[in-house]
Structures are given as structure tokens and as C-alpha cells.
Length: 86
Image (cartoon, rainbow, N blue to C red; front, side):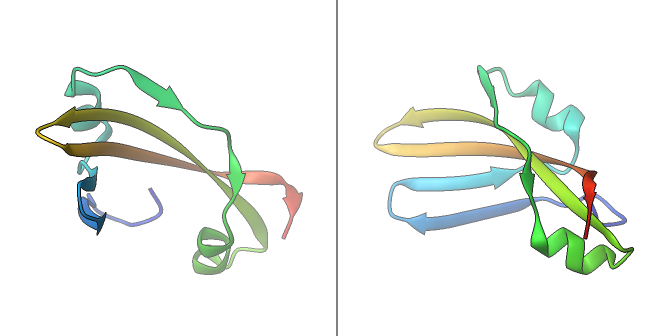
């Protein structure tokens, strides 16, 4: 993550869907669900925050469970400098 300390989050963008982010990769890995590793994508926000002259990319790994009509999507984000200049 691009922040200096552990970050966790919980968001409810629409009824019945909850996005959750554990504080650490170890916590994420302990969630016993199949994972999906998404493609690396350019991340303008991280590029702007870092301000180091490089373009940054972000990849999401997610796990999902549904119970009682509520889907919980657990997410972990990795970041890396892109091969392309900013």
C-alpha cells in the first residue's frame, strides 16, 4: 500500500454489497475463500500522491462471500511503478 501504516476499510456503496479491506496481507490471506487476481491497471491517484515522476499501477486481489442476501467483497491492493514514465 502507498500509506505508511496499516489501512483497513469498509464501504457499503449499495444495499446488499459490502467492500472490506483488511489491515495487512496476512489478514487477507487468512480469509478462507477462493481469490481472484485482477490485472494491473494504471493508477492516477497513486501517481499523484507519490509525485516521484513515475507512473504507478495497482492490482486488486479479491475474495467474495454471500450470505443472507449480503455480498461481502474483501480486497487487497498491490502497487508498483509502471514501466512507462508519468
